[in-house]
Image (cartoon, rainbow, N blue to C red; front, side, top):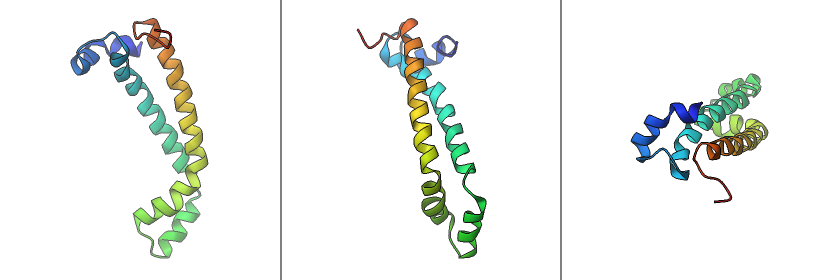
Length: 105
């Protein structure tokens, strides 16, 4: 449904709504919010006590992100990337059914 709903936007951005280049737009529109939600969930799972400990020792926000949040959320982020790639493969199969061509062309 998203592929069909974005035909006018895809035509405006790419100049066509058929072909592999045109399918990048709806695939990105479908995958970016999905991945953003997975990243948000991964970061929210980090223990707040760790963040408070770094703040109490005078850590800045970039330090908290670089030294606490990203290392602690890394396993969930890797899982999120894997899930997003699997979802994109599924989306691309659907895109092939509506004119996005496919792996065999």
